[in-house]
Length: 79
Image 1 (spheres, rainbow, N blue to C red):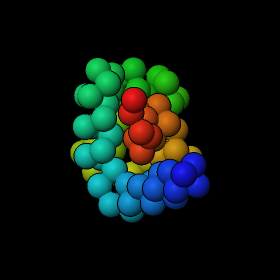
Image 2: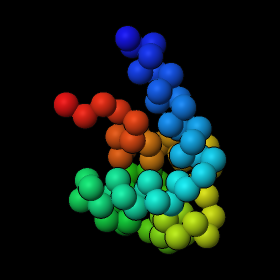
Image 3: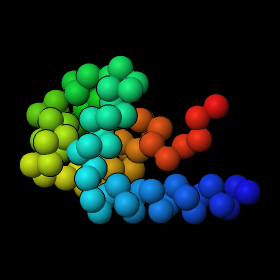
Image 4: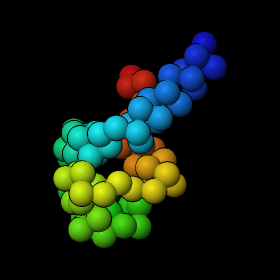
C-alpha cells in the first residue's frame, strides 16, 4: 500500500514538473492560504520567482519543484 502511494506521488511529480506546474503552485498555494512572498521565503526564492512560475513565464528547477510539492503537500493524501 505504501509502495503504491509512493508510485502515485512519483507519477504526480513527473506530471506536474512536465506540464503546468504554475497552475498547481497557484491552486495549492491559495488552498493553503500562503502568499507568494511566504512561499518564496519558505523555499528560499523571491516573490518574483514564484510569480513567474505561476504565470508559466519560467519553471522552477527540479530541486525547487520537490520543495514546492512538499511545502504545499501536493500528491499527499489528505486526512
